[in-house]
Image (cartoon, rainbow, N blue to C red):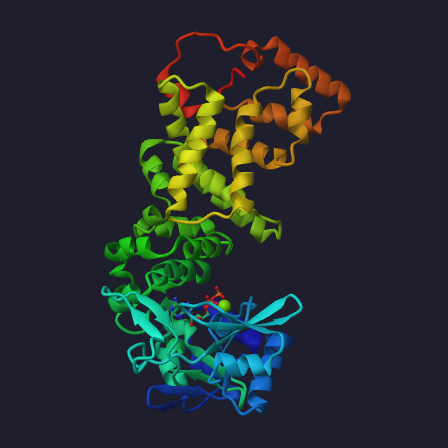
Length: 468
Ligand code: ATP
Ligand code: MG
């Protein structure tokens, strides 16, 4: 049945109901549609052992327990769920008592993490309406509608209507293996539509990150965004400036590392959201012809690597996103007479601190990112032992890839990248010959910089310089 379902989704236009095999269609009650176990393709076999353990323990203790969100959505789409979210009427404290291996996390939105080895199951207590806190301060909203705190408990129906998109509000009930659809999510799965629950503008004002989630799911699932859901985004995009940088960092990673980074980037720009996340990159794209190709190639490489199951590092992505701005700052500092090495240091520093006002970048990513940039100045300097030393740098490989990217994007004339490709593949004899070529080529020769007048444009677009 599951296979049939997958095939069905590759043939748009057919009705899901036929696959559910029901004569009379899903049951309807008060806006709730219940799709019984034998009429949907989601089976317990698709769920992880830990997810099932959490569900059963809750159920046996007399609580309601559902799987909800991405895991049900993705299962219905024939994709493998990547993590499991549980919704229940048990409070965080009751969950703590029930699961020794659990932790309450979050303040704005308290949830419980139940850990089984490396897998974490996220368990959320049903949310009610934010206004209904009877003065307990469990919910807080700013004057312009932003939810500062959302910890009012409610029932499953209220919980469903507080979720973001209809396709994320499908609940798999462990009591009878049925799916509960409170918001016509099945219809939207069928027509591959991403639709916010409720009034879109209100929902974006409550939590502007939902705009990013709309783009992420549209790109990841290849869904169309419903007209009313997409309409307010451009105008409300600046609301993202209210979101704490740490939360935006998490969201940006999800946007960039879901395997659809290029499509996501294009959508973010189309909706004016990119400028709220990476303002300087957005400005550079308008000013430097190579900036957009550079970023697009970096994102396409990331997608390809994820596709092939190879590791990716956010450091490389951030390096590409911020680099155009760094080069512009460097050019300005050089015009003021600063030599290249300190100019790169200062430009990097400035670009990073501006970016940190929007998105925090943990040191474990920002330090390698800056290494990648620093190495751009070292790669042209190859004489003597230098090529060998650079080759040994822990970030050499990333920096070399970055150099190729810059050449492909048209920031640099090609040549140096090919030299390094050959050097890495060469045996000792061949390496000596390649180094000889550097000696013979004054452009590749390190040493005192010749004080010849240079065209401004070239310096702006070639900050690492080819003159070593
Ligand atoms: P995936 O895990 O594949 O990225 P997901 O839909 O499971 O997608 P999560 O961030 O894991 O996304 O969130 C789980 C569920 O919680 C969502 O499906 C949605 O129902 C709800 N949710 C998450 N973030 C929000 C939000 N900002 N506003 C409203 N509901 C949300
Ligand atoms: Mg999830």
